[in-house]
Amino acid sequence: MKKNFLIFGLNHIGDVLMLTPAIRALKLKFPESNIFVLVSEIAAPVLYRNPDVYKVIERKKYKGILNIFYLYKLYKELKKYNFYACINFLTSFEFALLSFFISKKRIGISSFKTFLFYNYKIANDKKIHNIHNIDRALKFIDIFSIREKYNSRKLIYIPTEEDVKTAINLLKASNINVNIINNNYNDDNNNAINTNNANNIPANENSANYVANNNEANNAINNNNDNNIATNNIPANNNETTITTTNNKYIFDKTNIVVFSPGSTRSSKEANPELFALFADYLNKLGFYVIIIGSKKDIPLANKIYRLTSNKKLTVNLTGITDIYMLGGLIKISRLVISVDNGVMHLASALNTPLIALFGSTDPAVCGPVNDNSYIIDKKTDCYHCFLNTCDKESFLKNDYPDCMGNIELYDLTDAMEELKI
Image 1 (cartoon, one colour):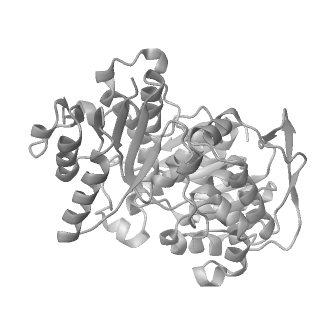
Image 2: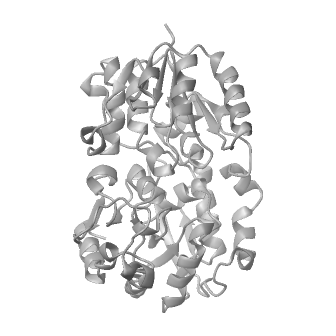
Image 3: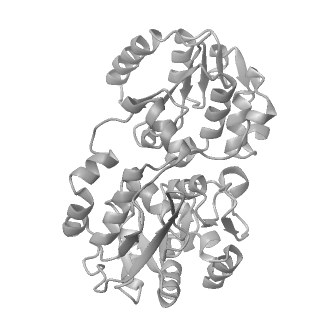
């Protein structure tokens, strides 16, 4: 019997990626099922290529009376699918109430406001919050008696051929010439996407196909002044990085591309920009290109790092012009990613790209990367792992980064490179 499942997902890219092992386990246990995921507009793109997800519903944000009308409209839309079960990873009252009206089987974290709406309650205690978010998500599906063989901690994100091509074109527009020996790109998971739900990817401006067909990458480079991106960051040379192939699959581990992702939704997660600049200089001397990426919010931080770097020919600032699909392709072809705790870190973990992850205010035991090619730097201070959105110390007001991240030194990064054998 085909069962429809509804998952109320979280708000950020990394948080949603950490739900994908639970989604995969659910799909393996119920292969004929249709899994719907209601998730924020920001995080939705990471699920559009997920072969285990039948439909992604983007959650809108409204206030006051508009939100009531939106929720009623959403209720009418969801009610028609006759969901076998709702799994609610959100803690909000409104979505707990919504699940009560659309499914007989409801799983969620029990609180004073929500405990009446769930018939399968997850205790809201330290035990559930102190384990890794991946394991926490898997706990939500324990009720379905999913066998151990279905459980994996591997994150699911699969770039397409177009994503890789778009990333390569973006680099070429920055005079980083990527030589493709074989244009055939094949991947079992990629084929699963094409056959599973081809209509699930919206034809909008976030689509990698849209970007490729409209030369968005080239236009973004040419118009980088409009995005407040540093204007001298296009290398004057034509150094090549070579991609070879085996069995019609790209092999990316010989490229000389290193990605920096210094920004975060929380300022308490960000590190000293001088550290990134020093490491960029170190990598440039070894012959690596450094690509700085991030959202538009991260442009001031990225520009500061770029200004502090010495070699403007080997350091490129693409902050504010890459969407999630470009990022997937770029991370796929990179030799190394250096990131604070953010969505890029989890994308690198999902793609098993060598990763140096910087931690301070958050705990890698709860939200750290899980791929085999990751190296975590987490230096203790008297108040680290506070999980605060911003730091309340005077030093933070002076430096714009917390002490726990300021303790990370250049040698920590170079040692990490040695451990990863980069």
